[in-house]
Length: 462
Ligand SMILES: [Zn+2]
Image 1 (tube, rainbow, N blue to C red):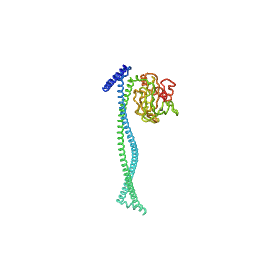
Image 2: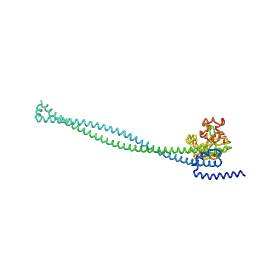
Image 3: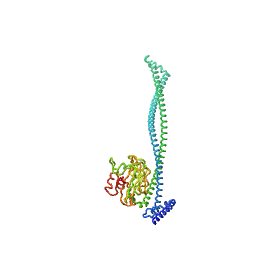
Image 4: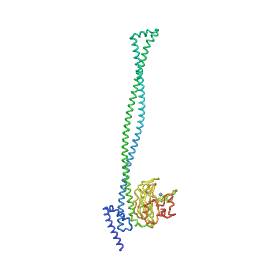
């Protein structure tokens, strides 16, 4: 009776403390005095009121962690938006480049066409000059002849010239010859003038062609300049986005760092870990479902270090014993064969969403690995759980084709859980030093001591 009374007063004291603590919580005492609480809660042999306070402080830290997690997710959304914008600009730039390249080819063709035309025009110009010279020469020649003949006529030498003919035939020859020569020269001059006119016409046509091409080239260059400007604008916008993305990434890293700090604090502040009562038996992850693959080897060969149990997606997964969540991995959607999801999230390659539970059963420390869980279902790291508590839901994340749980059991030995956590945090191996793959088979508890792998079928009694 006396004992009962003490218990009741303790409960009362604790509940009073709780009310008081909530006020403290509201007054942000945890924030201003976090160093005090960190130190207090790290210590051993806490009295009941300190323990209750530390539990509240842990809740406060978890709240902050949740808020930071939300910030991180929002930040990631922002980053994705920016990354999408960058992608859009890159697409635009590529399109501009393509168009500019086409214009450059057109430009080159036009330029060479214009060069050909210029040569032709120059050729024609040269021909015209030659013909013009010939015309002038002929004109001079004809002029000279006429002057000569007029001179002759004036001094009456023309008669002499004609009379000087030795015969009538010679006379005919002399008179018609002179006319014929003059006529011939005149005809040649007319022909040459025609040729010059013709050449000038060709030259004019060529000049018109050249003008057309020149205009085309100017338009093309104008188009190209406009595209270059658009491209430069896009490049500048892209640069701005890249800067922004870097800022967001830096912010994300900072938030992630803060979350990491809080997680470490939560680990350190786990006064409750000392209080974890060793379980006396293992609790099956699920009583529903059927075994689809046994441990150590698949039916068709190949190493398989865990037990596969298939049940509908969303089936609750139970904690094997009293303990604490050492690691929690989330963020993988429905998986597929060959998916690596889980590794980038800090867990095992292809394991999808994962929970690693540290538990004590009959005073022996075990780690239980639960993988392929439903997205959003793994409970937070550093959460203290009791045997049978739901630690996540069955899913098919990571390298998996259907809703099932893959569970592995590691026997760690008889050390104190706090000490184990301290050492594990320094080297957080997800195979708990009992190796993975083929090498895992050399670390079975049937052939060596801890750390070693136990057969889940035997441990859970499937
Ligand atoms: Zn499996």
